[in-house]
Image (cartoon, rainbow, N blue to C red; front, side, top):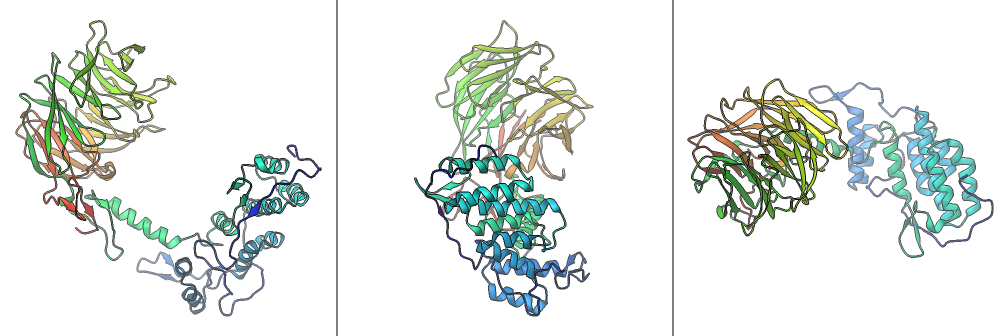
Length: 581
């Protein structure tokens, strides 16, 4: 048995945690059976079980189950008398008398009796009986060790636990506890020379999760159902875009349009030509924009939500088409059109390094999540990984990228995302060399990665945006339509609370916003007088959106009625929702 010897090992002082026998830590109490209930231990259907009586207008809620979960909720809230009265008046016990006896035996440490009763509580699946028996006997084993009854613990392991043939690896681990209790990591140590065994109330909660819900109602089942209903209401709310401080149980949840940034709060006009790209920093405190005027501007988002010019970066000899913030937001990469990639200090505006190779134009750039390496796409369709100081670490030649300026790295740093052909996106595992592809029927215009690196937005020539899952099996999740595109590169982004929305620029001078899950177009934002090339949603403020246009301006969008204070403090435009419309 994995090194278990018959000789009694050296003693080790251990202590068992005390537990109260009258109830569980979650508030569920043991009690006498409801009035009229039999006290024998043989399993039988609960009172009214099998009755088809239902409650509610839709006829899908069984009365027996409904009463039982209400009773469990009452007990878990500490309303023991009310719970017992409900059982008595309804004639529907929370648990059968056999289950009540089983729970009492577990709390009192009557291990052999509880294993016998386990076979009488209506379980059909033999594997569940074995698993539950294993959990009970393991607790018995630990408590025997706790009392320094090593021979009895060894006997329990050999004659009761091992014959169950459940989890042989765990059995070997238990045997090692007999050889050296002081080095057994299966215990939870509470002090230098004291070992704490799992309380019996916790054991009962573990058994409660293991046994079928028809036998033992899951802990706080009613609360779980209510929370699930609130989540479904929130997910179905196409305008939900606020931090949830409170969702009332008294009314159905619904947000209004005023939770979507739809009003122009500022117009930034420091660029002297078309604004092609913009991106908020990861912390939302800065916005970087690039232009056909060959400059990059770093804007600062003030505490009150106002955006002001911080630095103007000059040095590129061609229009700047792409920007990538470093993971810590202290630096950024900028890419000229088939030119070079420059790395800048975001605070001082100093150009720290220029990445280029043999006269080949660089078309795209991105940071690795570690902040120590940089990836670039070249005009010859190859990809290069550099260290931060410009040393070339690796080069992947062939059809790895196209002459478009989008390049992404998943948040785990394991995959490079690039457009390798007009209609194909390559997901390249640069360490594993594994490749996955996304095949579209239309020419790809641009793409954007979600913050968690699990989803990809792909903008297409035919005025559609496709949402792809790229974690594990690649699959198409949704399509978004309505925006206009015929000649230019138009970019889209994820945004809003938990990135629940998709936004895109458009050649009709408007910003389009869709609900991510449903695909429904929820709002269009007029205001620009030229093509909207790019949009970026502030990752730390779901109520701030920026758009860049050929009209040479950047618009900062916010809520129509900006409440600048919440609980007496500035919130940078972040609002809270209490379920009102």
